[in-house]
Length: 312
Image (tube, rainbow, N blue to C red):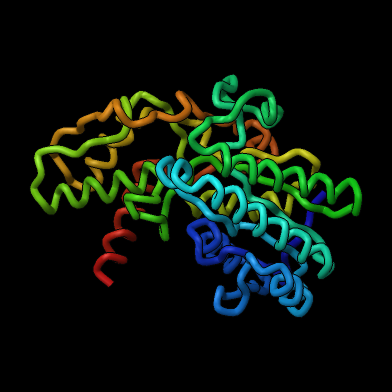
């Protein structure tokens, strides 16, 4: 079953975020009209404002990329915010889209929805088979609720609503704030500042042994548009590279790209998080999609965007 976006009105909720902006760039290559709404115009936490805007805009297709996101520190510090805000945003956008008559909708989840000790690589059926990673369970629960909401709308209302689970993403427009960012942009900023300061070392959280998978945001956007046009089903679909590396190896690669030649120290008093998190990419590959950007190339593009933004 295929769904062409050609000639459609496509709402990207969360278009200022890294993933949302990548989706907008990708859709720019399609023959469709991209719809966005500024926060000054519509607060996605305001149900009535969202419903009214969707009714006026009448989107044919919707990407739900809006979310409150952050790394281990932010998730641990603000659990109520991560659970409540994400529940409110996703329910407002999904129900607002249904009321406005949207033909198709894609909800974006996160790889943290899977159990902490899930069998690797993690297949889609691993959802709800074990305890979550405690450091980000609040965000994960909100994302699981979004998946189930889309499934419930399919069952009750016959809506063609699907979900995609991106792996750890990075790229242009990433969040480089050390207090709230994820590991990869945090490493880029640490290495860059250490290079400028001629520091002898940088310190990474934990032991550096956890294994993580990363995907360039523009590759993710390409996969999401591909799924919107080529997938319709009850189950969510993993979106990842299918390859992982340790946090220490990632730090080494980041330092090479940035040009920082100092030592990489570990702080074992800080949490590691899940020991390994590699998602199975089999379902997406079987549908006919695979990534185009290697990790080193993606890091170079991301670092250049970071430099350009800092200089602006």
